[in-house]
Image (cartoon, rainbow, N blue to C red; front, side, top):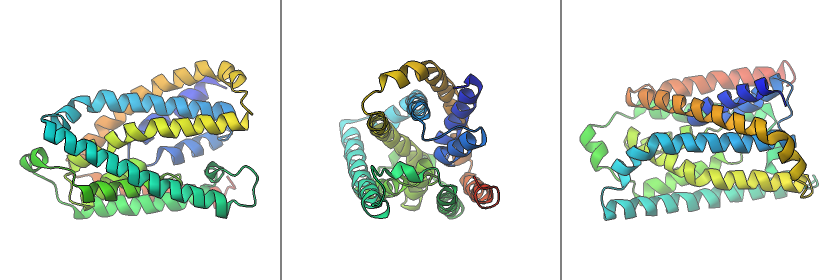
Length: 289
């Protein structure tokens, strides 16, 4: 695995994972353009490590904000934990149900069907990017900003957490449907202040990422018939390097995201997703990727 390719994929992942533009869509397109196989075992391991790098970037960047937003009192912390659990349960129900339906119905004729088999289809990615773009654009254009007092006193209600969690579940089977873009936009449309929606969305990401990585590793072990050692031995060094670059790129992306969100430029990410959707569709239908 070329170190240059690893670094490029890591930077793409780190930037796009934490911006509302769908990292998976960008990573898959980048891998295809560089002649990499997104389904190869070493590429799967690399993706797991890149997710770990970006998760660490989220923790480093948001830790102080989470303390101010959710840890100032026992009642505030309890309300945050309840909202986090509720959203995660809705994500598992919606996302798990969709994945099960896709694997058992849409892919029923394929042996050892995994929903990840659809992740290389650029036509589906283009459609998901377009859907995420519309949601982000609507939230950015039609939701007003919140005062500092509104942000400080705001709480994530059970209803808001349920909507955010359910929409996050919709993102799981569809590459291109940005998790951060969809959850932050849903929170804004549900009445959550922009900054608080961002805080809660990335707290959810820290809960979701280990489970997603565990699924990737389980799928890799199944594909390798339990013989994961040889893959790890050959890919661990470039994967660790990729995690470092994903971490650094993730910190940069988070600063960019927060600045644009607070400045009322959220809708520009929606416009970008719509443009990216057109480019991905062109790559698929005209160039045959």
